[in-house]
Structures are given as structure tokens and as C-alpha cells.
Length: 279
Image 1: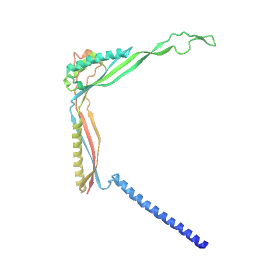
Image 2 (image 1 turned 90 degrees about the vertical axis):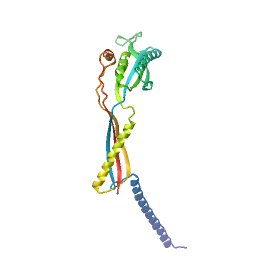
Image 3 (image 1 turned 180 degrees about the vertical axis):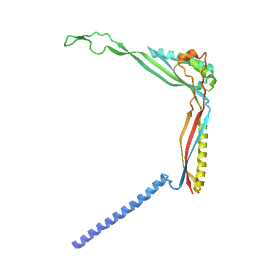
Image 4 (image 1 turned 180 degrees about the horizontal axis):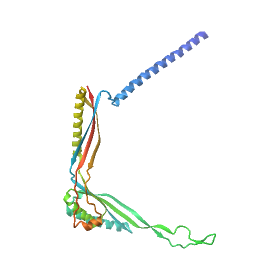
């Protein structure tokens, strides 16, 4: 049987062993943390010191090929059926006119259709009288209230016109019908994706030339592309002059003078950033 002294020595030995094991464990964790930190930095593509970063920008200008319009047909009636009937009649007249002008049905689109109850404030006949403490006769509550008088129904429509020579005819039609919130014509490129691709290729070519020249100046060789980012792309119509008339004014003037509507050009831009590894 061990003496008390030996037992104390054994107990102290166990404590020292546990402390040593804990120290080793903490050391292993520290090494592992440093290793993982290096891995994360590499995973996040921190290429500082061994890369070249260049930016390329390009613009493509093109003449618009479509003119767009938007307008509203609105009616207020006591019932929704009455309002819808009037709107349908007006829109049918517009669609017939656009068809005669040569606008394709696929280029006419309803953007929204709304229906709201219409209220007005009306005076209410007072029948209940009260007498105040000073003997004054008064009517309790307000002498006005909101009463529904009908419905507001509106339909917003957009039109795309591909023959610019027919813009005056379209404006005349809208003026004769008396549409509201007429907006346009606005001149756009109908399908800008191909031009966007062209601008991107030009931007990449510019970035490559910059990288080659920079590598030559630094006395290094370009390696593989390690990062590519495309941003700052856009499609910007250039300002143009358009004679703007309200629907009523245009109905009076359109027959005597056609508006001056230069189409201008649209600008499509692309900006790319490329990072090369250097050797």
C-alpha cells in the first residue's frame, strides 16, 4: 500500500501530465488556425504581389430602330360596366387606327388595368338638434361626409413603332381620341444584346493590350487569367429634341405641322476588369 507521500507525488504527476497535454493541444490548435488562415486567404484569391490588374472600357453607338409610346385611357361612370364599355370603345378605335397605320399587334401591350371607387364630399341635411348649456342650438357631428359616386377605370397601354415616318400619324391618332398621360415617342434599340456583346469584346481587347504593355514595362511575363469581372455596363439613349404637345393641343396642330423628332444615337457601354498572374 502506497504511503501518503507517494500518493501526493502521483497526484502531482497526473496534474503535470494534464498540463503538458493541454499545452500540446493548444499548440496544435494554434498551428491549425495559422494553416487555415493561409488557406482562407488563398481561397479568397488574395493575389497581391504576383498579379497584374487591368481595366478595359468600350462604347458602341447605334441608331435606334424603334419608337415607343405609352398612354392612358380613363373613364369615370356610375357603374364599372359603363366605364369599361367606354374604355373598350375608345381602345377599339385606337387599335383600328394603329392597324391602319401599320403597327403590328404584337407591338401593342396593356401594361396595367385599374378600377377604383370614386368618392366625393357631400353636404348632409341635419335633422337632429341639440341645445348647449348656454342655450345655443347646434347639430352634432360633421355636416359633410364621403359618398361613393361611381368608379374610375383606366387602362395603360404601350406601343412600339418600327417605322419612324409614321410617328406623326400615331400622334395625330392619340390626339383625336383624347388619350391621357401620353409619353413618347422615345427612340430605342429594340434588341441591344448583340451590341452589348460587341462592346464587351472591345473592352476585353483593350484590357489585354494594357496588360501586355504593362508586363513589358515591368519586365515580366503574363500568366493565366485568375479573375474577371464585368461591371458598369449600360444602355444610354443620347438626348434628342422632340416637340411635345398635349393631346388636346396636338389634335388642333398636328394637321398643320409635323413635329421635329430627330432620333439621335444610343450608347451602349461595357467595363471589364481582368487580373493576370505574372511569371
